[in-house]
Each structure stands twice: as structure tokens, then as C-alpha cells.
Image (cartoon, rainbow, N blue to C red; front, top):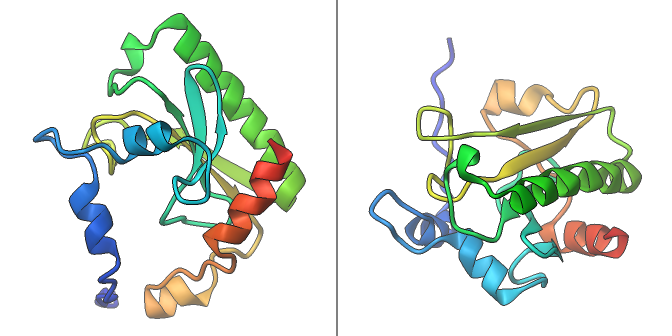
Length: 163
């Protein structure tokens, strides 16, 4: 098995230091919600109780997240209005991404807790990632590097117009 190489990415330090932590550090989602929809916040749509935000470090073009406005990690503690809007926006985002990108499939999921793969532990969120046949190519296999072919500004402009 090939040894995984390190990719030097110093621009991630600011994100990592500002991300929510178990010690109760600042929450990147709460900060984005407070700023409202903009390219700077990456919020493409703001609803009453939930919003749609671009993933700043996407796995694929169009990788978005649906987040409740209330800071919570407890899926079973969502209020009915939050749960309903979270799932409504998940369905709406699926339609928007389908129209914008025409993917061959999508990954939809929620990572809860550190062991469940959550990168931001204290603020639950759905991920929705468009997928295409062949989108896993030689780069991750040979160079352990994922190529994202579209910048966040272009993704933001494309999706905000459809919301």
C-alpha cells in the first residue's frame, strides 16, 4: 500500500483555528449565519430556521451543507420546525444541484460526533455532494490529491441564482 503524502496547505490554518471545537471555540456556521447570504459567508440561501452553505473545502463541485440556525449537535433535539425546514432544504438543494450540475448521483449524509466523522462537532449539518461517473480518477490513487475543477465564487454564483 502506498504511503500517503502530505499536502502543504497553510491557508487551512485559519479555518482550523476558527472551527468549532470541543472546548467551545467559535462556530464557523454560527458566524456565517450571522453574516447572512454572501460570497464571504458562503451562505447561498437563508431560510427561517435553517440555511444552505457551500463547503469551503469541498469534496466535489457543488458540495453544500444544510445547517440549522440554532447551535446544536443533537439531531434528536431538533425542534419540529427546524427538522422540517432542514429536510425541506435538503430536498430543495438536491433539486438545485441537479439543475446546476446534472450529476449522475449524489452523496447525502450527516456525520454526528467525532467517531461518526464530524469535522465540526457542535453544530450538526447535512452534506450533499454531487457525484459523476469517473469523478474518482487517478489523482487520489496516484497522488493522494483530489482535484476540484470549479472555484467557490463560480459555485456560489451558480447556486445563489437557482435558490
